[in-house]
Length: 112
Image 1 (cartoon, rainbow, N blue to C red):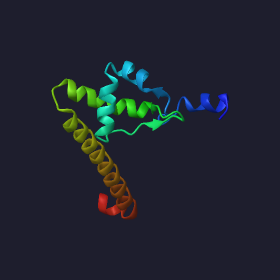
Image 2: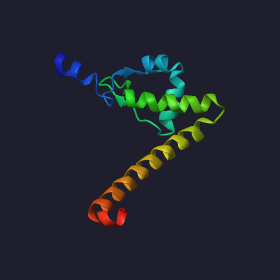
Image 3: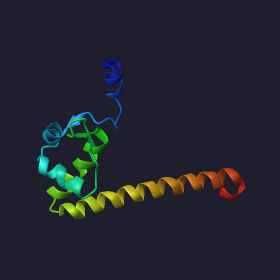
């Protein structure tokens, strides 16, 4: 990968640009917290060639949501489960809306 390729990926939400230390610093949490949400399978950081964890901006947003719940007193395992369920609900709602749009376009008189 060239430097030009790397710069182009900086806008990619899924690009693992952040080290564990930097991610923890950005979130105002500990590296142990990041390990714990990884162990709970909320996020799975990519690994560098040297085996170090790397986090994407998308993963940092998920981790920030987990930290928010934990800061409110929710146990970390429960916080991770809540976030997973929120994500599944959002995906189900998106699919439902797609089906609804498809049904309405197939039968436009039924929607009226």
